[in-house]
Image 1 (tube, rainbow, N blue to C red):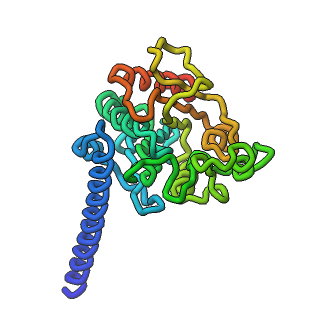
Image 2: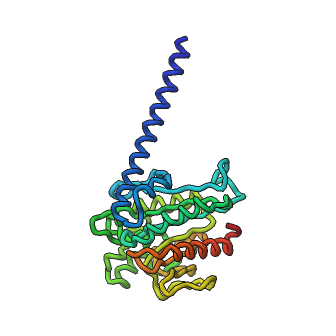
Image 3: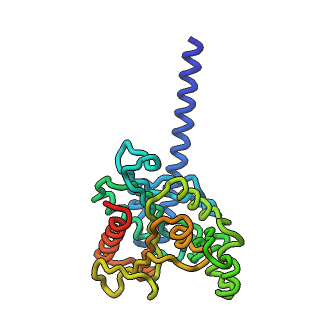
Length: 286
């Protein structure tokens, strides 16, 4: 009898612990959604909550959670051990002042929720750099003043990212790569997560677009539409080069027309279709 009572008490205690932890996680995500929706006019609090983001366990310098939307190929499939379905990683908000790169992620999650066919695993990070976005005056860098897009361990260059920053950018604070690769909790977690998740392809979103961006020949686009870059950037420490050259994963960088203006609904859909076509060409059926 004592053993049964003790076992029941232990089960109840564990259930309460899990429940309390879940409530805490939900509270943190709700608060994060409130902060994001207060900053971005095109993302409502209700919309953010509707996507049912999960905590990754990672935090920014200032303690903001890095959240993720995971969509599995099937209810019983494990994204890591499953070899039948491809894994796709999408990352927005590398730079905190590129509002549209965060907002558009929410629209694409809606498209996936509506039209997803179960052919891929998706892991979607709407905001890698919450500290950059959520300041009163948003900025490109994280809370330590580091450009997360230059904070990765690239080995293919003749000299390192810090030397490049000092000699070629005249120590421009917008492009400070950090004192060493993966010095920041956000970039360190992302590198570790890529190793764990082992994506077959990675999509990153930036803004505004540049004339040197690779323009997709797949479809016609308006003069203000996105540009697509699949060549490997040469900046020491760049995420693009780290992924495409050092760990050899297909990567597509989408450059939106404006950092502070969302594309039209038609353009949002068009960009998404172009991404799906690129994935189909590079990793197979989407």
